[in-house]
Image (cartoon, rainbow, N blue to C red; front, side):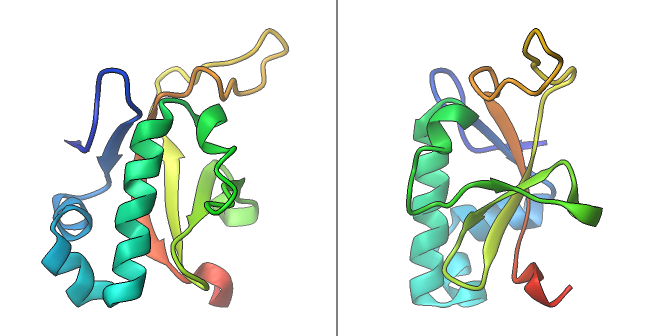
Amino acid sequence: MQSFGGGWSMEISFSSSKLQRTCNEEKLTIRKWGLTRAAVIRRRLKELKAARTLAIASKLPSAKLHALRGDRKGQYAVDAEYPYRMVFELDHNPLPTKIDGGMDPDKVTAIRILEVIDYHGD
């Protein structure tokens, strides 16, 4: 598990060390996704890290954070320059829950970035 943040910030890990390196090293981010998309991806990572919780991150209007459905149930996405999305999952075991048993976004403080992808063609 590769980390991006910690402490009073959202803990961000990546599904692979290659993805971590590509997202965290500006030259690699630009090479992979181009200048404009790379800037958005790097800004999203900073915003997510600074948000501290999923509840706070969900209030970032430009990120358009949303839960995914179907075969991506349990995953979430934020915009990374249309049509690309940064897809992640909650990195808690057990998952923080509310009294009613639903996920508690106020207590989600760790996510794992899975990929940056245009999944609309799936």
